[in-house]
Each structure stands twice: as C-alpha cells, then as structure tokens.
Length: 456
Image (cartoon, rainbow, N blue to C red; front, top):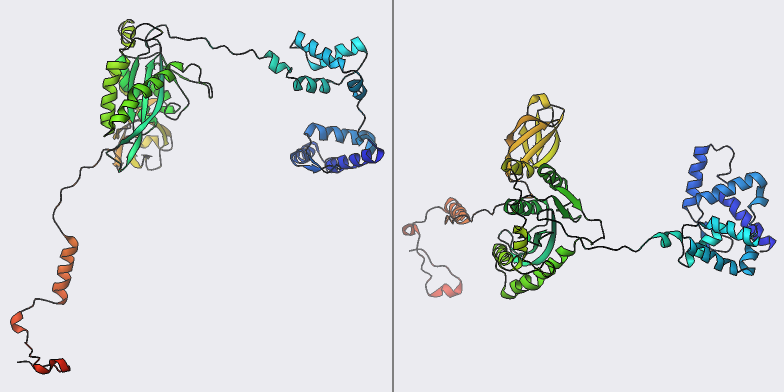
C-alpha cells in the first residue's frame, strides 16, 4: 500500500468517526452516534460501500485520541509474511484442531509461536479453519441419531394431527368445503383412537374430536401435537390441565417422533381417501359415516407389521382404560375468558352483554362457559366462584367457533307484496271503472282524414 492510499484510508476513517470523536459528547450520546454510524454504509476510497461494526468504530476513536490522524493509517499485518512464507503452519494448525476439536484458535496460535517462533493472528487462523469446515461448532456437533420410540402401554401417549382431505358438499354453504380430518393415534397400539372430518380447522374442532376420543377410549397421559392453531392455544392447554394430561408440542421443523402419525396418514390416503373420492362424496356427514366404519372394520383390525398384532387387540391387552369423571370432563371442555367489570356491573362476551355482582365493579373476572351455550356463564374472581352472569342482551347463543345450526327453510305464504302495492296504487289514481259511463265514439268514414267523430 502506498502512502497516498494509506492517507486516503486514514481520512476516510476520520470522516466516519468525526462526529463520535467530539470531546463534548457524553458516553450515552457517543454511544448513540456510534450505533448510528455502524448502521449505515460509508463510501470507501476504493469506490465500494462498506459498513463497520461498533467495535471497529470504537477502536478507531481510541486510536485517534491516542495518536491522531497517523494512528488511523492502516498498519501492515505482522503475520502477512508468515502467511505467505510458511503455508505449512496452517497444515499444522489443521492437525492441532483435529487432534483436539475444543482447542481454540488462540491456543493453536500460541502453540505455533512456541514451536516455530512465528506469530500468526488468531483471527487469521479462525478464518482459515472455518473455510475448511473445521470450526469448533462443526466438529463438536455430533450427528443426531433418532431411535425408535414406542410408548410402554396403551393411552400413555396419544399423537394428534390434521390431514387435509377432499372437497365435500356442506349444508351450510353454497359450495363445497375442504374437509380436514382430525386424527388421534395411540402410540403403543397404533390404534386409530378417533377421527372425524371437519369443515374448519380451529380450536373447537380439535376439542370436539379429543372429547369424543376420551369418552370412547379413556384418558391419555400425554397428548403429543404440532404447533398448529388447533393445538397451540389456551383452550386446549386448559382442557389438558383440568384432566391431568401433559400437553407436548413437537419442535418446529422437527418431524421426528411423528412417524407413526405420518405412516397412518399415508395409509388413510391410499386405502380410504382414494376409494372415497372414486365413488364420490355426497356430503360431509356421509364421509364421516364411511370413515368411522372403515376405521373400525379395516384400520384397527389389520395386523400391524411391527407389533404383529391388530391395533384393537394390542390396545385391549392393556386392560380397562382410565375413564374421566363426568363432572371433570364437562369442566375441562368449558372455555375461559378474562374480562373487566364495567362501572355498570356488566361484562361482554362475543357480542352479548351480561350483568354480574355489583361488588365486582372495576375488577378483572374469569368467565367460564360452554361455547355451545352462551346463556349460562359462571363468574370467578381470583379463582373463587362469584356467581352467575345474567344475560342482558343475547344476540348470539353459541360461540362463533361452534358450527351454527342451519335455519329451516320458511314455508311459502303466497303473498305478492309488490302486486298488492301496485293494485293499491292503481285503485288510488284511477279509481273504479264503470263501462256504462264510458261514451262511445263513431269515427265514421272520414276517420282516416284525422277527424274525430262525435259522440253518440
């Protein structure tokens, strides 16, 4: 590098730190200036745009204070000759890293200095080793080996998932909907605990399937789910907490542990959905009826290749499942919402308004309710019952997440409202007509000449 080039770089560095080098700035102000300078690009004398880290800018400020502009000139690296003249040093550095992967670049540089009397920069060694894929992180990371996991007993671990199914007609919409199959599989027996096609992929749909599965097969110890919206929500967390179920979510982008579910999904696509779409799907209810029959007659009665037993027999071999208490089951599937009581001793929920105990004015309360019946809501304050919420205005009887019942088609009355209006208008403007009072005209032979005949 020539003196002119070194001088240009020193001036460039000064231009970058000039504002931060002002002695009148306090530490906090100088920090803000340095961060702002590090966040933007600067035109280098070689024509390129460069950005510098905050540590670099702080180092330049310290150098300028210690030696002025001369200290900002680039220095020739002490190890430049060593890099060019002793390439064998890097081969030895590679051997030292492979011998002990936890050995740091600073430690390797120190060994080279004591062995050969050549000082090599730690940063140079680190960059060269990383370029060859020998950085400590890569060598320390052992390849992951995923063993085959299986629950020891039935209902120890349930796996749940959603399989996107075919298009199916829906009674409450004009067009078809994409059916979503909510599935629950027992990890030990591979039993298809329960499954149902839903029109929507939401919290309510997942809870309906889970509740039906618990009623049929008992309580699981662990519910293993992904991070989708139907499973990563406060409502499901509350349900599992009340029932004593440990809810476990799989790590994002880590499908390991869901192999049984994925294999069952493929089996359902090949053996059920292919046949269902071939014969045609008339309705969502018909699709669910056929799937329920297929699950019990085929999926749960086939001999599994790994267990050499049918899922149904292996599940039954574990003995009677642990059933849920009816009262606790009802409480588990109630939803909870936090509200602040207004000055008029009222709260709102999903567009409805309720009156609560006036002693709760200004306090935050918990509302527990069945999403299928918004007319009955219990109030809790600090975890203790605080009475009922009395409906003031009920505009919605079920939560919007619950499928709304289709209104029956009204019977035709035969009333032609617009015809009645037209008749009334004609009667008012024209009035009744008596043809006996209408004069008759005789146009005669000269009617064609435009002459109107006289009335008789």
